[in-house]
Length: 303
Image (cartoon, rainbow, N blue to C red):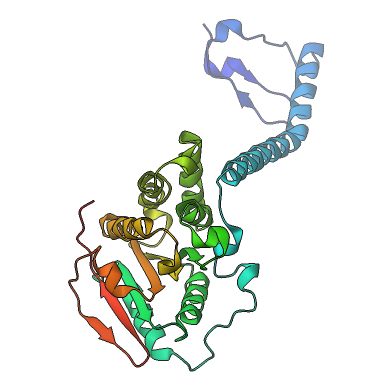
């Protein structure tokens, strides 16, 4: 064995001393700085130092490429989920439909905003009124504001007699497709559900709600502001063609109150408030305004 100073490579003042820790029995020592072996080692070390930045950069690019491939894979996974592109509030289908003008419908829009911000409020807000009273306009306006505030989880605008837009078959898969764009954590959780249940679009509405909506939202954790509200907007829910699905969906929505990581708020418009009442238990009164009603509904429904 040798002492540490003897295991130090040194040369003239232009080079630092390089201490070598370890098992000295395997160390090759040189007689002087003019030793050919020493010069060879020194030259290789200098080359390593010069090329190191490029190597590090290439590795960074490689890691970035892996991330990009991962993103492409996850978006490819999301693309497997059947959804209706024309269902959202900002779809091309609704491009020419109006929103509330500045200074109009302020009372009802203010009530809706307060409802989403109240952590103790009901999980469902049902805007009810006669046809032609502007409920869809309010829904589009509210959805647009939620979108700007990064609160909008998903939106679906039903339309009677418009094929898939009058059916519930792709309601929850469309929700999930949009929800995946809320933030990266939601995207990851939805893609994981799609990978695990490859035929999820053929599952029951109950299973789709559980695996594509509830579980991804419950995984958000600190990915969003603590107990932030995530809002789902459904316009003209009562225009879906299957009455049994209508009842089931209302009951499933009632489970929003069980989520702990986020405040899930579901804003619905439709004419059949009393019909919907058969599916739920009221715990708050209906607030009446001039042309329609807002009902803040707290649900306690057993499925």
